[in-house]
Image (cartoon, rainbow, N blue to C red; front, side):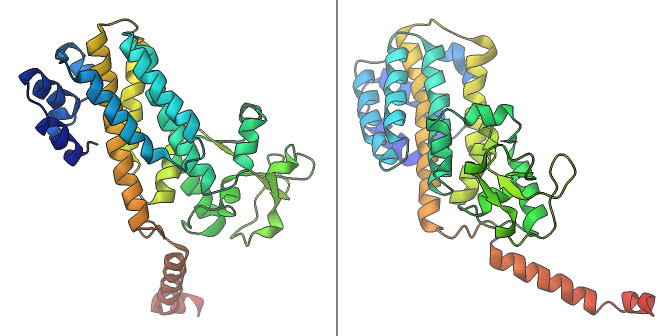
Length: 311
């Protein structure tokens, strides 16, 4: 989860032993080990005279990653808030900024590659209203399950296929027509039913929970989601149930920066994977689904046992 090149650059700039010790700490021994923040909470080294300058420079350079993202302004504010809270020794609020940062990054990726109706839902403050009404995606496994049910495969997520992950409703139970599509717009593998048991007439957008959002974002860019999920889980454990509020300023900055450094390192890898794999070749494409179906059909046709049973 760490950027080895960046870690080496920071380490090589160190002249003081305190600097080298601190860099080894927040880079997990120059990216050679994987540690949970809570496991090393009592082993935070002291900072050095150039700590804050190093952190501020890294923050400034890292903001280039978010240029062009839908929520770029909010993301930059979150980073600044995280640093300022860490400077006050308020680790809890600093890490909350890191966690919300991850959510905003993946929400940007998700909306940019599906439909801006999700942005409208957010701006109109209807997201939680739809969640309360049951229009949710709880985890990424649910996404794949719904796609397989409606298409028989795992097509790329886009402005059309995102509705296939939505909630099927009949005319009577259509609650959010502005965020729904007629079911006849899609060549479905099988008919879907509304909660009342009738055949569905519409598909309404579903709101992904955080774990589903990270999974969807990584599916879209063709990158494994486990690493981001681990970072998110690690940060969540610091915030809850421990709720660490006040610790020494230098320690808080190093702990917050350690997790921010991990987020940036992993995001760089993910965006690089996206640019080198724009067609989502890591995952099953529509073409591969068709090949898979043809192979099954061929196997069925050439099976002598099945022929004998038919006779």
